Length: 517
Image (tube, rainbow, N blue to C red; front, side):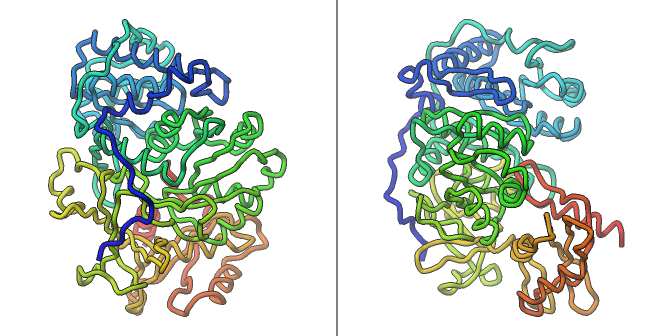
């Protein structure tokens, strides 16, 4: 039987996204909506609304039409929201590009998304111009001024007074999901998907007018896009943006702006729990830290909470779910879990071998269904069919369990389970344990082929000091897990490769291992 949400259902209005997000802009007026952390440059709600309408007007004057696509290649700055919602106000689709992509990766996205215009920051202009060659990009706009591109300011034209009429099912956002294989895929998210997820998330993560949020997670990624930028604007909070993560600046912004909410990923949670620099700053204004995008071990969650003196909770979601699907109500979280499924959603735990629902308390692949599920992958019907079945269930590829209270825990990825002598070993479980070792700063675990066992768990470790040895860490793990879960090989590295959203890039480690072999 499907597992229903314990939350009351929310009513999802039939509306375009930007009017929904800006519904309180006039009321809030001179209240800061977005503050650029490094410079202090501020956009009030009134200024933001005006700039969005001016941007939309400038696009329309240049021949941008309903259904056209604009690509944004920017770090987190206040203008990100202007470009994003200006495009949506003009009836267009926004495709958000990772600023660290190389020209080939950018070019693939621009071409696949059929981007008509591209907005970039000056440092990325040369790369962007090279990437745009051979695509449909007609004009590049640069934040500030740089030779070979139109200044962003020139797009701020005669305001477009009204939202271009759209169907709530029209695609408004087109972020790209890396997945586990192949080229990144464009995830088609509708106005309704994102409106729904703001309301669904608000049932658990509801923000108050006096909240101040730190915008450190990249807005090109669905977590930063929905939970920080769009949910924050809809809620009327002030968001302080950071172009890139720097721990000292992050802590300074929390202290100086009295930040109340920090939405983070596990690497930041790890730093908050263990880095000595945290003790040099006053972070007592924090009332909530939420970690997502990758599993956070229960021990690390507890350590972070004890050090900061505020609740630290986990959430779960995917680009394909707009993104949030699970998180616990405030004050009711269970360490190590992602909480119950959000309103208007239902889940199943399915045995990947049989395709049947797992027994009560058993592990299986997490399937989900709800109004926040993507329309599909752009130009890729095959991948869409592999991910969403005929009954509308999205197959996440994540292994989960659910307890008697309806709280879910993510065990690992289906495709990343290590098969040791027939036993299934979850890398995420071992990584969480490794991070509790006092000499281990970071860790990743991958399967390595073994003639006798089939596969063995190999750990890549970032050690804090020379006193800690790989053998110490192996003994530490061996004392705490079953025999089949023990770390069989160790390699010390300078850093663990991770995506911008904080997910361990195990594929990079597997490729390195294969090349070494």
